Amino acid sequence: MHTSRYIRLNTHTPAHTARRPIMGATETSGDRFNLVAASEAATRNARPIARAIAPFVRAHAASARGMFDFYELACGDGAHAAMIARELQGAVRAYDPSDLTSSRFDAVRANARGAGVEDVVRDARTTDATTMADVVDAEAYDGIVVVNMCHISSRNAVLGMFAGAKKALRRGGLLFAYGPFTRDGGKFSGPGDEKFDASLRSRDPVNFGLVDVETFMDVEAARCGLVPDEEHPVAMPANNLLLVYRKA
Image (cartoon, rainbow, N blue to C red; front, side, top):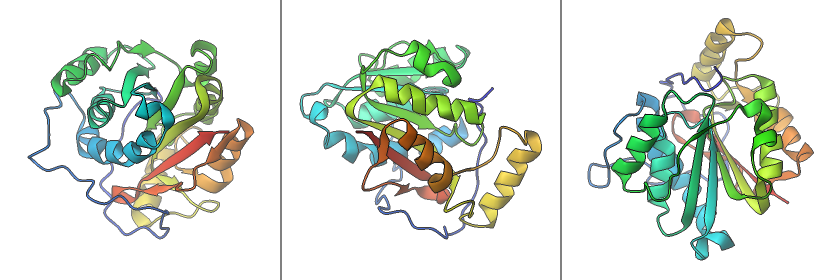
């Protein structure tokens, strides 16, 4: 259930400014490839996410050797796997997508083929975020990607994500967590995010709702030996953020 996606249509100006806004992170018809099967939200944000992640990956030593290995939690239809692998061709050796169920694994394969990265994006596997640490190999990856999961999953799933990252990442590896978040103890970026949070909590008051960067995400990351990158968090379109943690 925690891999469900909700479409956000917020266009208000964020009250908090992250350290590095992404420039030129919108799609143009000249560089778009066909996402064979993707949700509206994934189609809209896959390229900006890939372009935001790319500088961190290219600065990593494994990237220079073409040996950067990715794992994605809650991969959905594979739009992000396809876009990231395509954006970082020559730097990424392998990309392992995973999700709670196998219902969209055909779409994952189709999107990888459509992007021409089927040799990099491997067959998806089922993974429950709460028990990620039980199934991932130790120190097997340089990067972990999690898109739009933290606000629509149990807090145990988010804790499981951090525990899994602690085990799976090599030293210096990166955890990228994208989505809407609150800042500084629950401050919303604007009325749209506050309304969105209320809508989520009305559906599931225990598990759903925006998570705070400083008082929850940063704290739990630190418990697992993950420190915020100096550019963390990265400002993204529609008031979303890309959180970037590095394994010490």
